[in-house]
Structures are given as C-alpha cells and as structure tokens.
Amino acid sequence: MVLLHALAAMRGFGLAVDLSAVHINHGLSANADTWAAFCDTVCRALGIPLAVVGVEVPRVGCGEGLEATARRLRHAVFAGCDADWLALAHHRDDQAETILFRLLRGAGVGGAAGMPAERPQDDGPRLIRPLLDLPRSLLAVYAEENALCWVEDESNADSRHRRNHLRRQVMPRIEERFPGAAQVLARAGRHFAEAALLLDELAKIDRAAAVGVQGRIDLAKFQVLSKARAGNLLRSELLAAGFQAPEARWLEEALRQLATVGTGSETCVATRDGEVHVYRGELYMVRHRPPVADGPVPWCGEEILPWGDGQVMLGSTQGLGISYRLLRGAPVCLRRRLGGERLQPDPRRPFRTLRKLLQEAGVPPWERARLPLLWSGDRLVWVAGIGIDAAFACAPGEPGLVPVWETAPQSRA
Image 1 (spheres, rainbow, N blue to C red):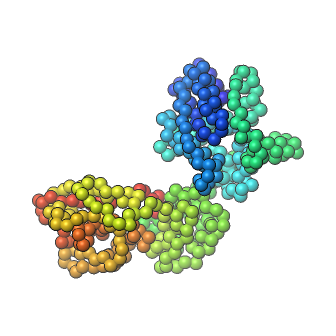
Image 2 (image 1 turned 120 degrees about the vertical axis):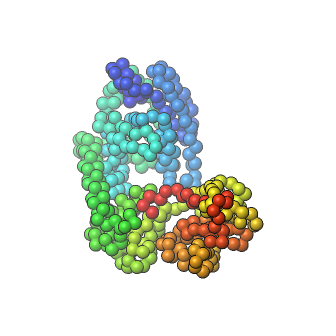
Image 3 (image 1 turned 90 degrees about the vertical axis):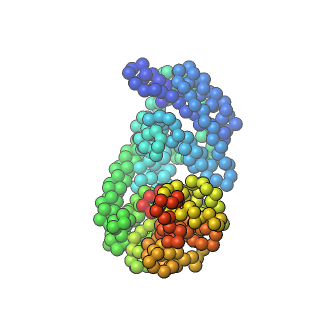
C-alpha cells in the first residue's frame, strides 16, 4: 500500500508513466476474495487500473512446497504482465530476513546476495524493488502519516513457517544483541552480490579459454582448471542451460567424475533437471525433455507434425527433397529409431546402417533415440540430421517435400 500510494502521488510531480496494478489471488486463505475486493476499492479511489489474476496452487503433490509453488505461479503472472517495469514492495527487513534464511539453508554466494534491486525477466517486465533500502519502520511511519489502510495476511502470524519464525522470533532477538542487524545483513548481501558478479565474470573468462570448436567446453581444458574454478564454470554452464543451481554435494560428485574421465570416453552425471554428458571430449548440458512418440505418427498431408519437444515441418517444393510421387504408394509416418535401420543417402555408395551414419555425423548417443524417422510403408525415407534415402530423391521439376526438424532450443546443449 505504501508503494502504491507513493507511486500514485508521484504522478502529480512529473512521473511520466502509465501506472496500473496487478493483484494475484492465490486462493489459499479464506479471506482471499475479501483481499481482492479491498485492492479493487483502493485502486478505484486512486484512479489506478487493477487486474486481479487468480491462480490455482495445488496443496499436495507439487513436490516443491506450497510457498515455492505459489511463488513460481506468481512470478509466471509477473512475466506475462504488459508493462516495462513491475515494482515490488520488498523492504530492507525483508532483505535481511531473506539473506539470513538462505544462509541457514546453505546458500552459495549468489543466493546469499538476497533479492536484487532490479532484475530482467525473459519476455516480461523488468522487476524493480524501489523500497529495498528502506526499513519497515520508516514505511510504517509513512503509512500512518498518510492514513493508509492495509491488510495483514493471517498466515504471517503462523510461526510454524520457518520464514515467519525468523521474522517474529529470531530477528527481534538478534536486534536486541546486535542493533542495526537488518542493515548489516543487507549490506552483507550487497557484498555477496559483488562477489557473485566477480564469479560470473571469472566463469566467462574461463569459458572463453576452455571452449572448443563446437562452442562447448573442451574436457581437457576444463580438467586443468582448479577445483574451485571448474566448479564455478560448471555451475555457470548449468544455469545458462536452464538448470537450477546445483547442490554442493552434487557439484562435488560431478567434479570428481569429470576429473577422472578420459577425453575419448563417455559419461553421464544426472541432475534433477537433466544430465551432464561427456561426448567426444566435450561437455553437454542436456535438460529433461518431453518424450517422443513410442508408436508411429501418421502423416496425412499436414505441413507440421509434432515430435517430442519440437515439430517436423514438411514444406512443398519443386525438384528438391523427397519425391511426393514416390510417397503415394504406401502409408507415411514418423517413427523413432528402434535399431537395425538402413539408409542410402548417397546413390554412389551402398546401404549403410543408421547406427554407423549417426556415429559418423557425430550425433550424441542420447539424441539418437529422439530423432524423427520418416517411413513409407516398410521403407526408411528420411532421418533428421542424416538426409534422404537416394531412392526417394525428387527429380528435377517434380513436386517434392523438404522435411525440417525444429526443436526447442537447448542452451549450450
């Protein structure tokens, strides 16, 4: 309410923005609808457009905890807001509490930095926290001087939640013995943020020195790094590929395995988000992806067929790709690789096993079972990444199809 009131007041002092508000109704409290109505009343009085967005938070089976699930859904709404900036009202006491909470959970330097004052979102408004350096006591004075009304979430009084216990029981005791502790913790968070920035810059330097010709980390160059720098680089690669920050125990085991594997060997270290692979002397970060179809996916003339986390596009051409005429004689479908397939991409060479063709093309083993294979009856016509069987090649001037497999991007995979 303080942030909303202050931003609304600044419109009269030359703040040239279109101000609107969003309220997220999590539906977790019996008073949730009353809170939404309260927000509507306040925004109407201030002349601020309000969007009320309801989210459904599963109470069981979410695997990440109720609060974490609610936060994830809330931030998904934030990312979808049609705005340049989205202002949140976290203050210095919130920051101190966050830093202490994360430290007690064993956070690394990045986590101990607390909440950033501003943060970009992918395809969404930039999150800003204008009140982050102000103590709650000062905001309370502002609220009282301006006769503001606000709502207290009754769940904040429940000390069974660890964050609430820190806020209501631990932080007051710390302040008794260490006056100004919240300010000191917030300052420590800024130091951690600076250290995290330096580690990010070091990871970029080490990546530039260790990157191979394919743009991935060369294992031999990775192995000569000190353990601390190797761990920092691996953590950076995982985050860049969309993984969650790795736990310390997992990182320790991953570094142990990567330090001993030979550059000509293959290995796989599994995480909750995917796997880290070594293939042909390079590191691959591979996220979990939707499975491909077990059975055939029939083609009935569509321009697009879904496949796993992507799609196969079948564009019409003239004199290129697969002969449309030769496909008419039998049912056409996509299938995944089962083993034993043979293909003749080059009419000057005999049929070869798909296994051999995939090896020569450098297709990693974990990708081979995901490749879409186009069949006409019992004849293999096309394999993504390999090409078209010579017997089905389109003659000059005749109608043809050019298949293209598009997949969701895998950062640094």
